[in-house]
Image 1 (cartoon, rainbow, N blue to C red):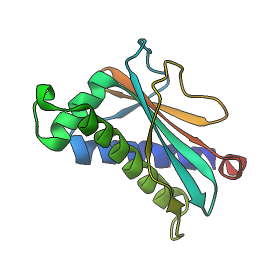
Image 2 (image 1 turned 90 degrees about the vertical axis):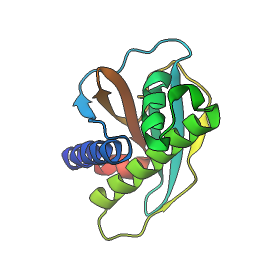
Image 3 (image 1 turned 45 degrees about the vertical axis):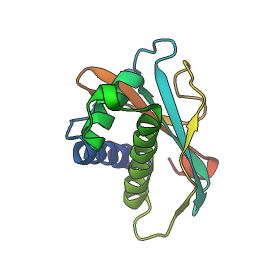
Length: 152
């Protein structure tokens, strides 16, 4: 199951980034370097059919590049709200695509994605974590939840 989840997450992230920002996201074995105050994080709760949480952690500069492509605005015109919206939309889309692959044909219920307080801590406390690179900038996606992780 863990290998299937990894394939599903790689596909979900690659397709989401390519479709939304026309960029290529490649899997990485290494967590991204974390510069103080530069990492943004969002979370999204899963309610049914399993309980858990998705987390997305991305450096501000990378997110601004994605938001620039997503909204068609130059970086200097992007507001914090637009950057947050881009992060939330990325997480929501990745989570939906991942669940469609992992639990095909089932109805799932998610909460609303939320911006988390900035954290300079890497993801990885009781979660399955995947790391990715876009043009040498790294970001991470994690999934937690006892019922989902028990299957992995």
